Length: 395
Image (cartoon, rainbow, N blue to C red; front, side):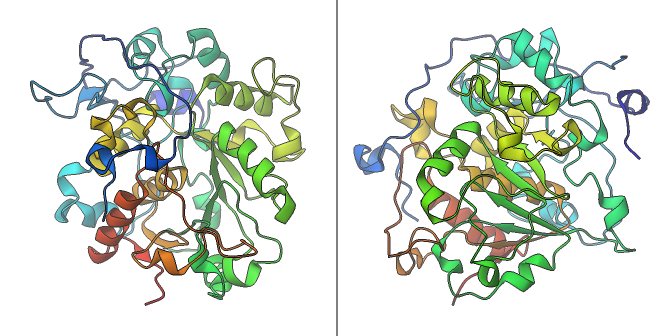
């Protein structure tokens, strides 16, 4: 049964909103800049009735020299846990080295309750995936008001019907790395309760290595369109489509909000690069608001600030730096699942493997200034060593 806004209005959500003074954010630059344009010193890490939005409280007081674009202040909300897992990640992470970074009540997803003038004023100072900079208030209202049920604010929205008396949710998070080629991990991946995939996830013909199920597909409109152009010749025609598949937008621009609105209402995109396009072309004829989710910009900024604080933030490319789409997906699973197994993510021996498992011939892994893949690799190693995720490695 789907929980409505009226149901959530009864939940106790108390905190106080405090923000930094509004400052002008750096202007966004182009989406991808080859990493060889960065010097090593600049950032290559080698190794209707609606309740008010849950009021935000400061995560910590920033230092006197902390740049205003960091914005280490986040909304906080108390959404009841869905499981009674005795040894889930959230209970163990607090005792690990990641404990000081972890915010238990950070909103992973944004939805109807979050869109207020007050929150727009707070978040419009942050560009790209880290805020609502460049997205006008009317567009936010038009989009987020259709995300008005528990299916939109809970990542594992169908757990009650799926759990089969299990106390813990088990999630497989599948990247597209070449390490999966020949792995024969497909059956193991599909055996999880949930299977997360991202971007150019080519499945047909690779089921033995990567599995066939997809319950959560993470993407931005930009990465979706790029994947269709780049990998169409090897079998990627769009996101996986199935009854159990949910589509999780990582919004980088207003085009993500426009595509989300069109998909939820079965209308054509009204403006922007996708103007006139039919979203059922990507998400299937049965797509509905209940199958759509969207990461909260506070969550992405929190991941950047606390888990993936790259030296790129000290460089001229700071305005385009964000966690990779795969990193956002994996860390979202860390915040919502009880047990997480990660496959197809970069490991220290990455040079042995092609960039993707579906590459027809060996392709060297490329590095770009908008992501810090080496830093991400180091974090995956630390999470694995701490027992917070199980990372697939050949050795």
